[in-house]
Length: 136
Image (cartoon, rainbow, N blue to C red; front, top):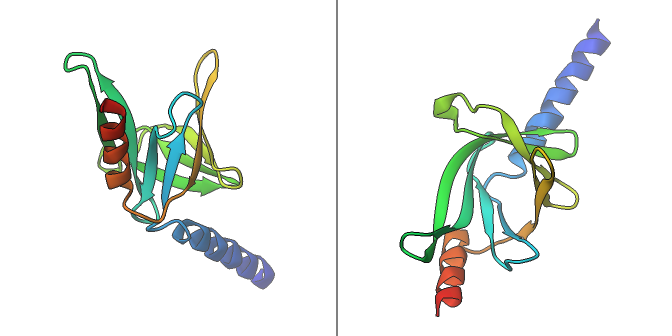
């Protein structure tokens, strides 16, 4: 019984450590068509901010869309929820592979992907500057 308890506590400690390793880290993401498409900022051990550069058809301009989401780490992936903690997180419907930093969104007939990398500077500023560069 004592061995099981020690093993369980070790697993919990490792899981907690893994979650804490992303706090205050940012990822900048790109796709084949967009050198800067969005990113993530991990603000706590269970909350991240997702940034996505979107197109406003009415204004004919790009903008940065910013949303809060829950996340959890399982095996070698970060699972990202559809909603924030205030709305009970919702389904975990997109994922980041921790080794490759490939972000994937499974869809009915395909999987959308983006390549991400760690970004040590101001992520929001970088995304805003990218929009300005594209609209010049």
